[in-house]
Length: 115
Length: 109
Image (cartoon, rainbow over all chains, first blue to last red; front, side, top):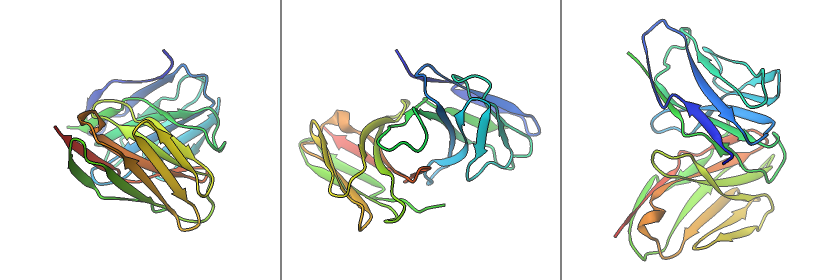
């Protein structure tokens, strides 16, 4: 079945360490996104990519980095510069960014806890 | 960052009751309004993508309306069932997606 796979589901990180969250899609979608969810807040955009080898900062990109070397993969690295990394991270994709009437598909999320 | 508001924040209804939620969004630079259903431990799933003022969409017992001029959308569930229990998210697209905080619905058998 086509979909988005995020791994791992739960992740624990020590302060000062970088950690990479995986997001893979087999929907042949051009655009991929990373969102962060904190209690009482809506999903906020960290980074997005419209095409391979291209990505753009979202509203809260500081302390994060991404790559898009393959169409199906969009890993997110939470660096030690991210001051408050404990959160729920959700990956999504759309066929193309900015095309109306196109729904987003989501992974199941990764819950990151800094210990 | 644009403001998308959903109300109520949470809702408990009895099985068989009908219910509705509201999503408010900016009335300018509108691309589309999305509704997603998010069950615990699962991925959000698309319910509706609405693009035209006055749009009404229906899927089974769930329907939605859209008013882009005044910046709101309503989601209706007729005859709620326990399996309708979930968080219902709306997202305003312009073309970035801006999400509300969701309405958590619990249907009590």
